[in-house]
Every structure is written in structure tokens, then in C-alpha cells.
Amino acid sequence: MTLYALGLNHQTAPLPVRERVAFHVEKLREALGELTRARRASEAAILSTCNRTELYFAAEQPADAANWLAEYHRMEPGEISPYLYTLPRDQAVRHAFRVASGLDSMVLGEPQILGQMKEAVKAAESAGTLGTVLHKLFQRSFAVAKEVRSTTEVGAASVSMAAAAVKLAARIFPSISEQKVLFIGAGEMIELCATHFAAQGPARITVANRTLERAEQLAHRFNGRAIELKSLAEHLHEHDIVISCTASSLPILGKGLVERALKARRRRPIFMVDLAVPRDIEREAADLDDVFLYTVDDLSGIVSANLDARRSAVEQAEAIIDTQVGQFMHWMQARESVPLIRSLRETAEEARRHELERALKLLQRGDDPKAVLEALSQGLVNKLMHGPTQALNEAGADERDGLAAAVARLFRVKR
Image (cartoon, rainbow, N blue to C red):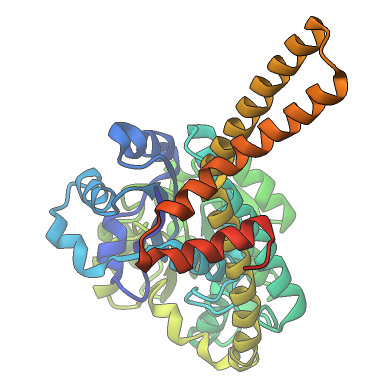
């Protein structure tokens, strides 16, 4: 089995494609079980965020997993293959380390991906698909990310999707402190956005969520109010800024609903940021006058101005990752030798047991103990040396030098 990383991200696939291959949290266990059935993969984990969908797995061939990804999302293999990357062994390890460290993110150094990776690991553990190799890979990824963030400036400066949304809103409105902000959802990204916007002192903060209790918990932190998702139609027109990021498989805000809100607002503009994949807000809403709708892809250009310090630290971060990749591959190679080592020790143990049983019989018969021990040691030496000696004697001219060097190294003798 070989370790692979297979997937697509914001660099290889546009948002419409990423939407189609996103995995919803509640279906991850089912998907992982399906992927590992019929031996398509012996171990598997799925990382699905607004910017990427990636499979980390151990398998004989990656093609089966690529075909499964297309089938699962009811796509033809040809629809998805132009956007996919397939990374084997050390390339997969390096990719996982870079993703965890924020080096492969739309916003260089953003910290949210690490939490999302940890959630992917929890899902794989729950599904029973996180084997020894993937467990080691992700634990090492988290350790590498911690080292990169603590020893380099990759995570420096306040740059994130949330910060980018605030900066973009500031271009639309002269002062955010006079605006009313609506957050749809109550997950980590919405919490981060609420933190950034709350720092600007908006006139009001409202949190809408399917579960009112979670909305109330988040709203309480920012002295806001909470509403249920089903009451959005009644309250949407009250808000100037709308930030949405849920796990819904269907849009929450349709064009018609937004249009009615605009009429109630007497055409006062609404600034909307849709951070969800698939989208929470119908793309057609952007066609309405006085609606400023942005997606995760739109934010990429906003964050570039504050990335200089982080970019200068990338070389240092890559050096850390290079070292850690080498160490991980050494562990994997050593693990591949385990079956051979076990077989070697079993052979030696069998020889030891046979000679011991023979010696005990001789002692019970009354033979001289010194002679018995001598015979025991000679028997062990003969049995253990028989294989290497025979291999050297039978080796052809083209393999004798290499075999002789290996034997000399294994038994630490001079040639």
C-alpha cells in the first residue's frame, strides 16, 4: 500500500467545481466507509473546506479513489480529472505539512485550516478509517504546523478571510460603526468574522442559526441578538452587512428573498459575503442593483497587501518542512521493513528453540554440561550463518559485490 493525497483546491479548480465535490460534515462517516469498502483504500481521511477537497489515503492505486470521488458526487471522471492533483508518498507528506502550516491556503498562514484538519481526523477516527500511517501523518502535520508558527513569521499580521471581509466592507460603507451586521451560521468561520466585525463597534450584531441555542451562545459574546434561520425573511432587510457560512447543501438566501429585502430597505445597499461551499447565497443575487456580493474567491485579491511579512518567512518554513518530510519518510521506510524483521527474528527464535530442546535432552541424559553448551553454541552459529553463507556461495558475478557489501554491513565485519 502507498500513501497518497488526492484532491483539488482554490489553485486548481474554480468555485463551481469545488462546490460540487464538497463533503458535508454529516455525511463524512458514510463517505469514508464507502471509500474504504471493496479495498479502494485501506486507510482514508477527507479534508473538505471552502477552498479544498482532499482525500488522504493508503491504497495500491490512486485511480480507484479518483473514480470514487467522481461517482460519489455524480460526476463523470472527465469532469473532475482536469482539476485533480495526485501526490504519492513523500509528495503527499510534504503537501499535508504545507496545508497544516497554512502555506497552501488562499490566505498565506491562515490558522483556520489547522482546526479543519483536526476535525477531518476526528471524522476518520469515528468512521474507523484512520490507520497507523494516517494517524502518524496527521499528528506529525500538527507538530510541524506548531513549529512553523512558533519559529517563523508565516502566521504574523492580522490577515484572514474575516479580516479581508472587514476591509472590503470598509470600502462600501464610510463607517462600519453605523451599520447593522447579520451573521448566518455559528461555526468557527462565523465566530472569527464576528470577532473582527465586533472590534469595529457596529450598530447591531445579529446571529441567525438553525439551532437557536448555538446562535444565542455566539450572540451573547458580542452583545448581539439571536434569531432562527427560518425567520431570515422577516429580518434580512434590517441589516446592511450579511456574512454567511453554513454547512447547508442548498442556498439559504435566494435572489427573490434578497430582492424583497432591498425593496423594504428602499434600495439602500446590502454588502454580502458568502464564505460557504456550496454557496449559501444564490449567485443570481449579485445581479441585483445595490447588492455587493462576494465569495471566498473574490476575497483573495483583498488580502494580498498584508502578506509581505508572511511571504518572506516561507523559505524558512519550507526548510522546516523539508527536514520533517525526511524524518517521516524514514519512519515509513522503517515500517516497511517490519514484516522482514519479524520473519528474521522468528527464524532465529526457531533455531534457538530447536538447539535448546536438543541441549536439554542431552543434559537429562547425563552428558557433560560443558560439551552440551559447546554443541549448543556451535549449532546456533551454524544455523544462523547457513543462510548468508549459502547466498554468498550461490551469488552470480553481477550480484556478488553488492551482496558481500550488504552482509559485511549487516554483520559488521571487514571484507
